[in-house]
Length: 162
Image (tube, rainbow, N blue to C red; front, side, top):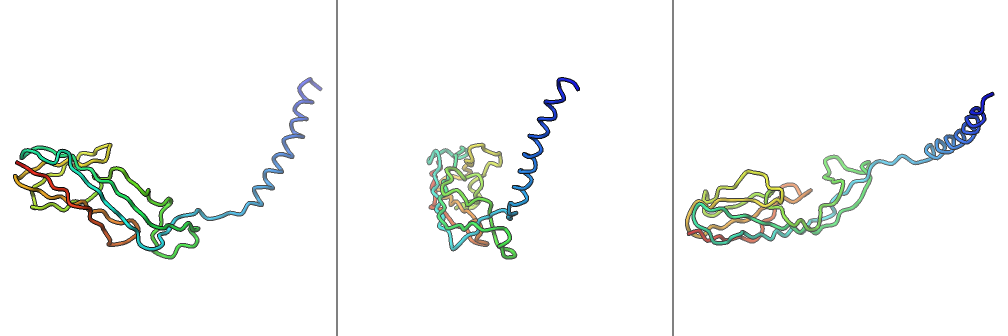
């Protein structure tokens, strides 16, 4: 017998009971389906937009900004409780999204008076070039998560182009 054998033997006697206890605990744990969130009722969505600058020359760029505020009730349930086709999310939407202009749709009046830039902005703003002189009105439009076919419009943003 060498000097190392007693240490290995002692380690086996300590390790085996720990492994057995861990296996016993894990076997006793209840396996649960992951939790998700479902919408209870209609959400209130408010879009607040602005343009910088609000007065430009024809052909100049403006930067569009939109904040989205969402109020709604989300209930946490097990995925096993979901109904077929029911909309769900892993986490409820943020109540305030400081900048969402990049991801929105826009209503433009007069039509074809704005060219939206397609380059991705890390800050989520949206660049646009004013193509016509006069007053241009832009309205941000956002789909509402888990309310199929519903969208909301923000207040109009007016830009004066000379």
